[in-house]
Amino acid sequence: MKIDVLTLFPAMFTVPLDESIVKRARAEGLLDLAIHNLRDYTHDRHRTMDDKPFGGGPGMLLKPEPIFEAVENLARENTRVILLSPAGRTFNQVIARELAPQPHLILVCGSYEGFDERVREALADDELSIGDYVLTNGALPAMVIIDAVTRLLPGALGDAQSPGEESFSQGLLEYPQYTRPADFRGMKVPEVLLSGNHAQIARWRAEQAKKRTRERRPDLL
Ligand SMILES: C[S@@+](CC[C@H](N)C(=O)[O-])C[C@H]1O[C@@H](n2cnc3c(N)ncnc32)[C@H](O)[C@@H]1O
Image 1 (cartoon, rainbow, N blue to C red):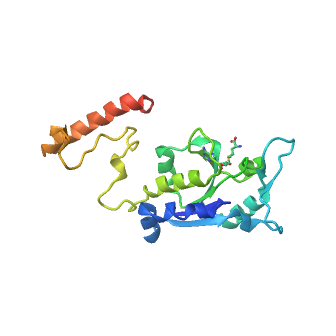
Image 2 (image 1 turned 30 degrees about the vertical axis):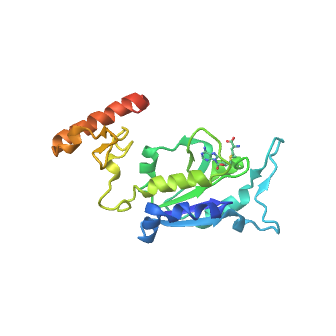
Image 3 (image 1 turned 45 degrees about the vertical axis):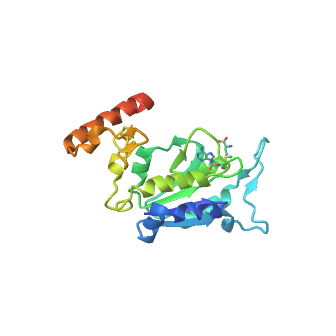
């Protein structure tokens, strides 16, 4: 999978996407990630990216020209252009699974008060929000999406781990998990997990996943 990110803050991406599973996926060629500075697509002396909104109002907007030029430069057949925006559909595991098989994504990060509406109308295939709150720019939302999508790429988690049993994978939250010691400060691991009976363990986990989901996220059921 190839992901191109357009941002005014490329430095924000360096550490988070150079650690852990995303780092390995990049090293193994599962993910080809490129971070582009939108200012590189401006042509004036001041590398201007923003301007005042027509009609007045607070703040500045991203100008359309550099974004159009960048996207047109990077897009190829089968590219999906995604704007990060609080007004987009809310990102979740279903959308992560929908994006994971895509060959090429361009993630366009907003800044200031957001985008000139023509970017939405003429360039975007999709608009995603990571939740009902306003961040200062689209870099963190883009990183959230890249992380969630990367761990779904075949081979990204390695043999030992699987996304199949994680929260949301079957529309449920994950069951409770324990590791050693079996008794920690008097808090004991449920007997069934020590029994070695795989059928019983699987049944217990399925029940716990349903119970936890019913209690915490009934909207998922
Ligand atoms: C300060 S915000 C602009 C908010 C915009 N004026 C509004 O009211 O919707 C600047 C940029 O941060 C990004 N952003 C902020 N919150 C976001 C969220 N919850 N999900 C996705 N992107 C977000 C978007 O790219 C947005 O264009």
